[in-house]
Image (cartoon, rainbow, N blue to C red; front, side, top):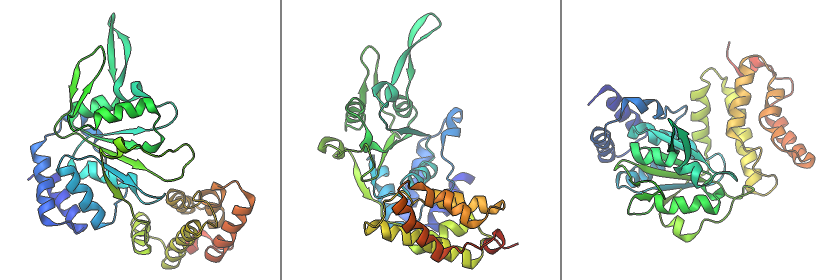
Length: 311
């Protein structure tokens, strides 16, 4: 086993993954070599995903050649897990974010004029199929009908994509697709039964206090114990208010919280940092008042960067 394989084994053991699953992941890595020309596409996780059960469900599905759909509310780590999976399986990742302009040509490719000839400029789905990558369909429930037609053929059990006017693509044996979706975002729609049937669905649980503490303390090891407690408490307070319908999910933003803490590191006052990362994510004055009250119970206005980070 190479050094990277040893690192991955230790990484998965640290997440308490079953030894037999770890052995199969290492076997997968050794069976499907990676072309050096695309090695920079293997995701390097910026943070870990914590949750042994979810890890094991995702790994087992991918090992058996299935595609997975990560479904759940905001800030549950869907993209973090997708990134971590690309890393442990040592596969290049191709991210496709669905929006109003994402169509079949965005995914498969489009005609382009090159060297006096019309050629196909390969899209991310084509490249993923060719190189045995992990294709990440972000916000898949925002896909419009033209893009959904591509997904149906790409995710079909025959593992073949037909491109009119070009050749038939047979998916590489290592190719897998990971969809992510949030509920209730503007522009989302219900996935049709045919599309859902092409995935194994992993329901992502809401972040817990224990997990939140691990995430923030790993990212900011020099946080004071008091600041760590209050930042985690603030996020969980807002998550509870959103679950109870008191506020929207806009301020329940873990990325925003982490970004706020980064600005405190370079000297911004904590109250101002939290305004940018959390409070100002909503544009409704009534909702903002509720969030301000929650922030004040956790982050005093007179806090300074020295109260947040150990010198």
